[in-house]
Length: 264
Image (cartoon, rainbow, N blue to C red; front, top):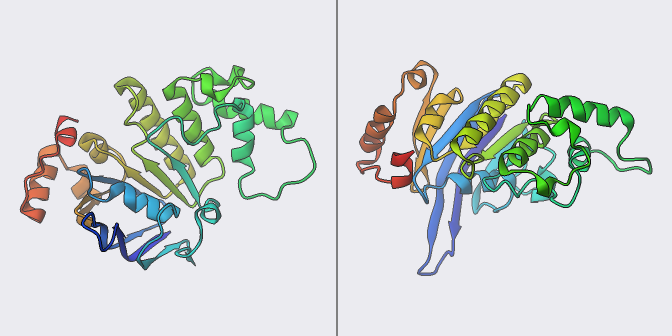
């Protein structure tokens, strides 16, 4: 479903601030893979997602989704392949629009626009059904502005919108990092359910080692723009945080001392 071949991305090339963010990265995801991505600050995790989404053009290499080469496609044209949830709950939705208007936009992603009412009675009934499954009481608030929702409610809504049209690839970019632990656990549980029910190929970036181990069928660790660990199957199921730290040290000959990850 996703093939990255020899991806390189350098920021501020040729200056004293030059930073190699992705260093000859190759990665293949099968249809239905749920891959968690972990690493320290500056490891290249978010840059990896941004190059797939088209936010950053790559310096070299190729990106293929479901057999189609999208390397040169601009960000807006890649949207029909992708669903994405950001770290900031304020992104991914339109704050000044109603809940039902946001859902209508998501439901019509990739479709041609015509001269008809954008939201029908049948649409509202379907929106209520989908929102009821979130168990947040939003099904009775279709005409509420999204900007009035809590961070957790808004992130759950963004997740629903990102998965409504069954994207070929779902990108979760530290999508629970800004939430309190209880809300983060609920959003992660929803993520697992949507991924499983839709059999969605998924890349989830996280700073939380426990979450990286507990979710998905495969885990990759990045360091200095490279993939240094790639663990799946029974090996991943048996992983502990100590195992992961030890494996990192063996792979890089470095101490994995990012406080944010260790504390998580």
